[in-house]
Image (cartoon, rainbow, N blue to C red; front, side, top):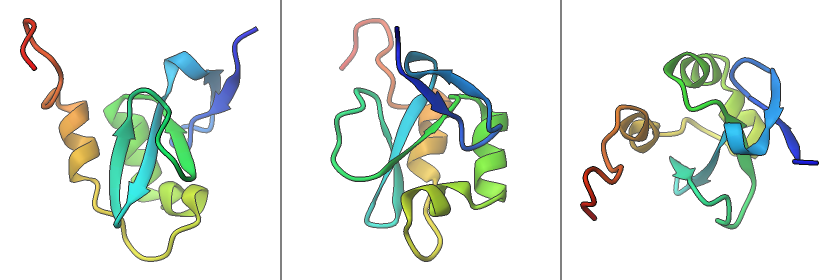
Length: 90
């Protein structure tokens, strides 16, 4: 049985493989593709709607128990496809 997590954006429960783990490092939201980075993380569906809902409701701040605003540029780049391997590139 695969572990189940709750998306901080839409609050729906889903399998861990269907969600993206996000961690906060130096006030930046960083996607944790392998789910192995240290620290508290938040799980979100890798869709624009869920990430926008989580940012709007400050769900990342609450889930990770950090204070102040978080920079979401790295996470947004990941959603837009930047930084992903394309055609075998590194």
